[in-house]
Amino acid sequence: MIEQIITASTFTTDEQELKQAVAKAALDLIIPKLNTKSIVGVGTGSTTNCFIDELAAIKGVFDAAVSSSEASAARMRAHGIHVMDLNATPYVDVYIDGADEVNPAKQMIKGGGAALTREKIVAAASAEFVCIVDQSKVVPVLGQFPLPVEVIPMARSFVARRLVDLGGTPVWREGTTTDNGNWILDVHEFMIEDPAAMEIEINNMPGVVCNGLFAQQSAHVVLVSSSNGVDLL
Ligand code: 5RP
Image 1: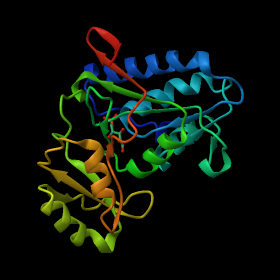
Image 2: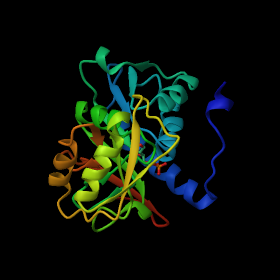
Image 3: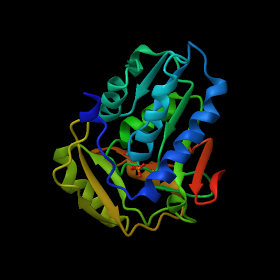
């Protein structure tokens, strides 16, 4: 079972080592804060997968995890980690997740793995957000990575036209359905000068469920791995 869910990495050794290093650093950071009542929020993606594999080693130290995706929940359950529904948890102590881009203000673009909506919910429900990335994800200005926008399927073309009006070039991520049954538009060539304002503007479009800007609520801590080790942003 574990072998089926924990698939072999498609990354080169160097990339994988950077992901593992930052995942291990996140575990070291949170361990002193955990107790047998702690609930750990867990994100989605290849860097988070490394964190899940680390978390498995200390599963007796905390109570349960809350997941931002079916994929991460399955990986955790395969490790024997107790996964709870967010509705059944009165609090989440800390949320650990990767990002597609992060700027010096600790604002992020997320959603490369199509889990942005649940990620934003679990992040918002958590007392602390620890973002784990390698150096390639740190940018001065957000927007080189296409901005994912989760849309209700019947609103796809309407929202796409609105995003064009805003100056972006939306591309439908065909073949991808989110855990919530919705579709993703990836918006290329966006000038994201004010991430918090743009986050609100896109979320206000009818048919948009959520967009991948995490700017109104940024990360509290960003751990960045490079060939020199792991540092705080
Ligand atoms: C998934 C996400 C991921 O955190 C983001 O795509 C980074 O993934 P990876 O660690 O594989 O580079 O937002 O929706």
